[in-house]
Image 1 (cartoon, rainbow, N blue to C red):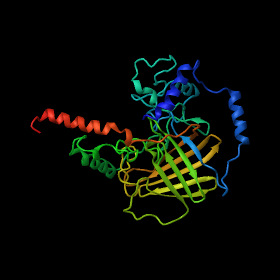
Image 2 (cartoon, helix red, strand yellow):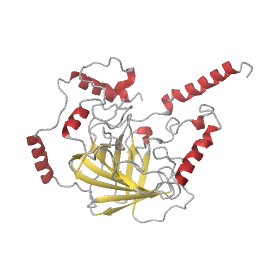
Image 3 (cartoon, one colour):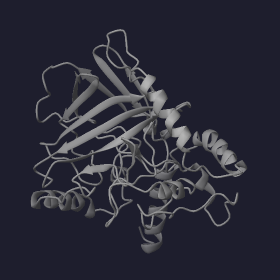
Image 4 (cartoon, helix red, strand yellow):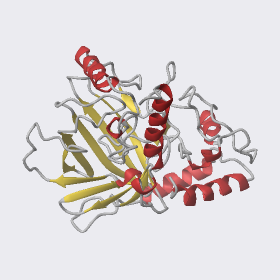
Length: 348
């Protein structure tokens, strides 16, 4: 968290000094950008494939799932209203104008560390459409229901920890808090690479002729993806981030991942041994990679599902995530729980 002070303090200064809020681009500007896009050519590596390398971010104001009753796209007026607020909509995500305006230049009434949160500043635009959800399949923009077996496994997973208190020992704390891997509601490393709603949703891609490396700023998680058609891991071997192999389909890098670790939950749902995630990376302009994903797991879900997320060029540094060096929260909550127990049972 401490390293975020450098970047987000500068961000706060820029916000407070702004004299006007960003709005929708003019027609002339949009036409100029379209003209520039027509002239743009995909940069390529020495082996001839599209160059995906660099720093990128997937932070966005667009919610992961679509709010009930909404269509698939925002109006441009709604986009303008969303992008001139801080996008903080915990009570009713996906609605328009639910953020807390920062135009007043005051943080009065907000918690002191609000400035360090990065919930995105732009709506996700794909094929010229300002999307109301990152999930696009099913067509309602929401993850499909779980199967009866999926429901049973989720309840079983919860029951494993219910026999202990939440603060009984370190292994019960979330994986992210233990600095093992960022999991739970969002996992920026993937698969799939789901945007976070807090901070550090940035990553670096490095590519060679036979490997792609994706290093995420959050907990410095790193995926090593092999390009080719090698042997898959045995079914019982399920590492963090799974077993990924990639191939090129034209100018699109297609990554297929199986053997995902059972503790690497996807939005709270632990994967079964049958889960397969297919990711597609396509460079669409100088500033954007279109990231598409499909999740298949007939054991857990009633149908395959997925979505589209624009990865935007990140013109800034990624910082070391020194998690354990400053991880005071774990020792604090565990010692606090021991103190509470001593008050409840003075003889202990």
